[in-house]
Length: 178
Image 1: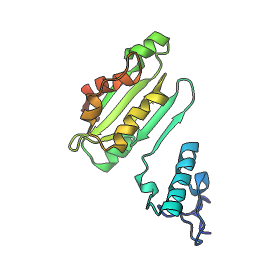
Image 2 (image 1 turned 90 degrees about the vertical axis):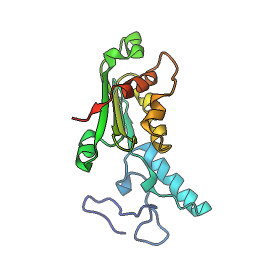
Image 3 (image 1 turned 90 degrees about the horizontal axis):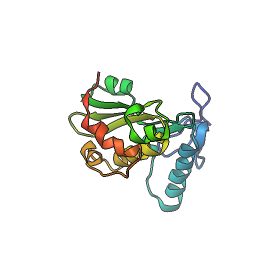
Image 4 (image 1 turned 120 degrees about the vertical axis):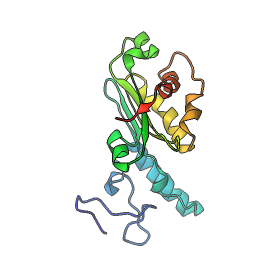
């Protein structure tokens, strides 16, 4: 079975190894060392084997949460990745001291940040370091999977008081990515 220089089992976009009929799922393939990525690997392989679905990891948007205090959640591209891509981007950033739910809970450490493509209006990535960020990030992830322009998320009404309700406000404050 072929491996890369770091010892990960090489797989194609449908998680097939170099051995016919053998797939590599989870952290052994180097495509994400998280429970959610391993489970999604299983879903892709099972769907392809049982339903000939043609699914692949190419369709997957990178995301994770670290359950530290406060939690850190990320989805999509980082600012550095956006800069390297050469895209013209806009970004919004807000400290958790200006998020009502965080203030109400007395947990104001951290920030919220989102970046969008200035030309296509595609959401490129987001980071939330703060209370509730590990849940609120799913609003951004869902919009990204739906390929919705950032304006769709910007115009949504969210329940008050939540961290997610500040996402439209964050999108109202977009400035050129520095």
